Length: 288
View: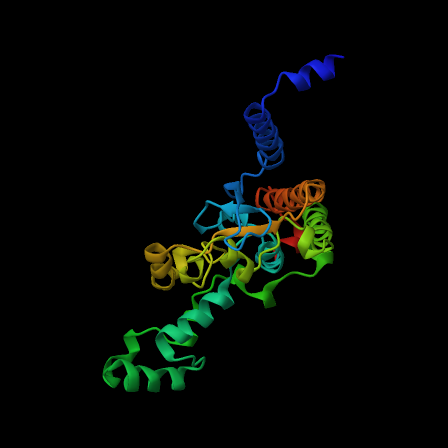
């Protein structure tokens, strides 16, 4: 009887507000522990009279906080292993780009796609009017690559056996969470991003910057390049969707929440890795 009385007490408008508050509270409970990025959820309506969709929007911009990977004095091999893991996995849930994406963008921006120094020099002279005598002061592919800190270079990743047990556990947790999120079908995954689908729900979004708003590339070492590639985003906006999922019927909402939790668990595993407090290396572990 109490349920019946409760149901009768809601008008259509009040029921809608109650559903919205309940939905918002459930989403907040799942996403609140994630501090790595700021996320919000928005319900979108199709321009083509299709079903509504739920989008996860990333409100963070710039370099992700890499914590100990960037700032600690832990062995380079440990830091490179953690960085490599983030570089290979985070794109499954976040709009983020890495060093190779930046390099490719800069190659097109400055060197017409050239990736070796000689071809880049010829491009700077032929297409950008550079004086051959002044090329020493200009960025070339090798100079850009040499600016990478050692922990960004894949060849420096330490074998798993040389990592401390606590770090191996965190890396394993990240891989497992990444695999679990990847096991979902795209149409039932809150974190799946499809650019064509995004354009159907957000007309004009195709004019946004080609690179996403987040990067794993450290600003300290690549300020000029990141400023150059980020200019379009600052002027035209960034493609800041972490995922977009149409809901053709109400039954899909349970699947959406399941996937939202899996994505949050994945981001918490990444956050846990970034917040790792590496042990003081001893003996052979002190070597990179």
